Length: 322
Ligand code: SF4
Ligand code: FES
Image (cartoon, rainbow, N blue to C red; front, side, top):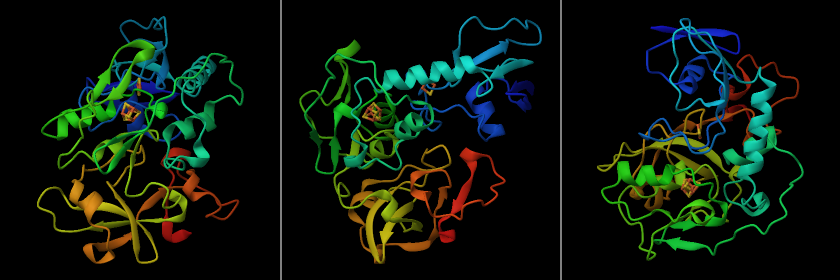
């Protein structure tokens, strides 16, 4: 085991652990945000730069600081490393710049976007963004594309995190979409608008951190904060069958994978569970799914002045408290 100190908190981790995962072991506000890293997807990370941190001391053997901020999702810790995240004004300033950069082309259409309320970019912009843009050039826009009968691609919102590409590569038996072109011409596409049709393709919706890939069976049916996430399961011969069903009364509005506090699915689920099982009788409902107290979905659902012991971004509440 090796020792690393992040924002003054020391922890011990296995050699080879990244700074981001070491921070996740500690938990709380000092965990850097991550828009492209996804722990369940091999090779993810290193694309968005939201997880930048400052290495104030490289290791016990060589305590010199690293000359530039580093991506915490792809930098392994060294024994004796000292890292600064929220305690470094330089990091916070850089993160603000990254948010501004991510928002250069991303439309500010949260009021009509299905991802609003569970969009990582919305949260990031709220916490680090600036109310003004300095960008004067024309933003790039794309027409919406149907990728198969159940998934809508709205490329204008894509931040090119590659998560959906890794998902298709690693958990489906054929990938028919990817990032086409390079630089500011890069876009997610299926080249000749092939459809993504295989048993696990719907997971690209769950991994997309923004509203670029959305579930056509749920689009515009409800804002997420008006439906209640409930843990449910069914016997499924394709996947684990453990999901979150989003309900209003007895009606199932949508089905997603169960997500942890970092917004990552616990298990990928199949398209049958996600798109075809929309009756309450299809599911054994276990009870309310936890939601983050600081998420949009939780706004006004808790008493003011409540003392929350857990740090902000691991502060899970139970929806039954609402
Ligand atoms: S469509 Fe979503 S998941 Fe895919 S690269 Fe764009 S932002 Fe990432
Ligand atoms: S999460 Fe590290 S670069 Fe995107």
